[in-house]
Image (cartoon, rainbow, N blue to C red; front, side, top):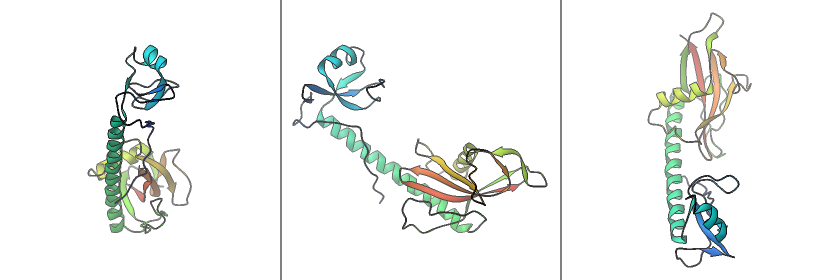
Amino acid sequence: MYRPAVSTSLHAQKKGGGDVVSKKGKIQVQLLETIPNIGQSGDIILVSSAVFQNQLKRGNKARLISDEEVERIEQKKVEEDQRMADMAMQTKALLEEAMIENLGGEGQCGTGSTNSEDDIICGVALELKRKAGPEGNLFGGVNPKMIMDALKERYPKGSWEGRQVKLMELKDSNGNDVKGKDIKHVGDYNVTISLWRGIEATFILSIHPE
C-alpha cells in the first residue's frame, strides 16, 4: 500500500502533557485564521505570552493547544493523506485500464509515475470530438481545464478534487509543449496529470473531428 511522506507544520514541544506547552518562555497555540507573517489557519506555532494575550487571544485568532491535541491532529492528517493517496492510486488504475484497452497512438507516453520501476503503459485514456475544418483545424480550442473536466466526466469514479490534482504536462505528437496555449488541431497529445503527491499518470489524449 502506498505510504505518503508526512509533511506537517506542527511544532509541538513535548512537556509531558498539560493544557499549556511552553519552551523558553513561549507557548504553543493553534492559529484560528491566517495571519500575515505569522502563519496559516490551522498552523501550530510557538509565540510569546505577550503576543498571544495582546494580539491573538484578544482577536480570537488563536487558541492554546496541548501536545495531546497536536498528536491527534497529526494522526488525522496521516490518515487523511493515506486516504487521498489510496484514492489517487485507484484513479490511476482506472486510467491504466483504459490505456491497456487502447494501446498505441501517436503520443509518446512516459512512465506516468515518479517510480522508475513502474511498467510503461502507453495508450489512449481520453478521446474528445470537436468541430474541425478539412485541414484538421479546430473551431475553438481545447485547454487544460476542458481536459480535466472531460476526465471527470469520463471517469466519474475517479478522485479529481484537491489542489494536488492538476495537469502537469501537455505535448503534441512531436514533443512540443502546448500546455500554455489551447490545442488547435486534431491529433494525439501526451498528457501528464498529478493525482496526489508523488502520484502521476501519463496518457494519450486523442482529439477527433466530429
